Amino acid sequence: MRCWICWLLCLGFLEGKKPNVVVILADDLGYSDLGCYGGEIETPHLDELAKGGVKFSQMYTSARCCPTRASLMTGLYPSQAGISDFTYAKPSKSGGPGQLGRLSEGCVTLAEALKQAGYSCYYVGKWHLNKDTGPIRRGFDEFYGYRHWYAQDQWDRKKYERLPTGRKEELRYSDEEFYASDVFNDYALEFVKKGQASGKPWLLFLGHSSPHFPVQAPAERADKYDEVYRKGWDVLRRERFEKMKRLGLAREPFWKLPPRAMVPVDRDDIANGFSGKRNPAWASLPENRQKDLARRMAVFAAMVETIDVGVGRLVKHLKETEDFENTVTMFLCDGML
Image 1 (cartoon, rainbow, N blue to C red):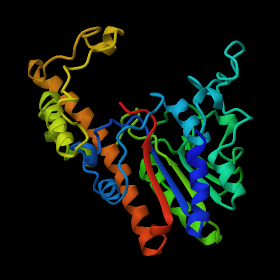
Image 2 (spheres, rainbow, N blue to C red; image 1 turned 180 degrees about the vertical axis):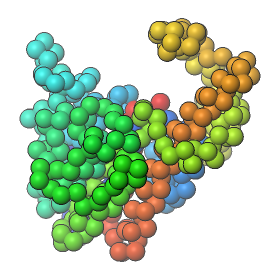
Image 3 (spheres, helix red, strand yellow; image 1 turned 90 degrees about the vertical axis):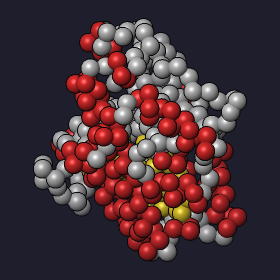
């Protein structure tokens, strides 16, 4: 499981120059949400990266944000890294070393490994590996984002911090201007420039919290998706499946479009009367419910597109500064839905 970290370190010896590394992690993205994987969301920059790179179709996650992040950050199975299920304020007394609720002191992070190889290391976004074992303590030189818990209000700038302690925020925003996904994109570019100025190879880990809840995005970005999602899930799931077949991601007869998913057994105010039942046909829903659900998905789509816009800015800058070809760029998700 450590092999991908070793692979990065070996690249420098094979190519004669240590590559820069960009890891972009989305949060709770659907497998087919991106355009290059079959989705209707506009993701031209990620689609272009996929076109010119390697598109994986059989990667695995731990189906939950912090165990997957622990594995990605250390190259270990989540239980070996200390976060087999979730993060805790205090280590579990009965769960053993796999349930520390924080990164184990016995593992090495990606930043700690690359620092030994002479890298400058930067982290932007959601940490969720326990705030007490934060990014600065685990090998990163600079950080902007949030360490506490798995989600924060994207509009509340007080929830986010610049580390190490005492660092002044290079980028300033009014309450009206602040939107976390945009700010993460801004700081990612700011830290890349720092890395380039350092004269060292550099690592940027951009851990987006989008499109994890709370589902929030500027209204004007979501507006263009309203009509797309008014078509409803019965139409859109067929369209995605047909596109996935054209892209070679879904191959018949091995892949079939399944029935609508079952709604988990939960409180009725969460399950909307369908607890333990299949999701209903879209056409059976009243118009006001269709409109509400379509708007929720439109906001989700706007969050995903915002990630893509940031990727486009990073790629543009790397190409303008002639660093693109010497940068390994990876896009992943911590819990594919």
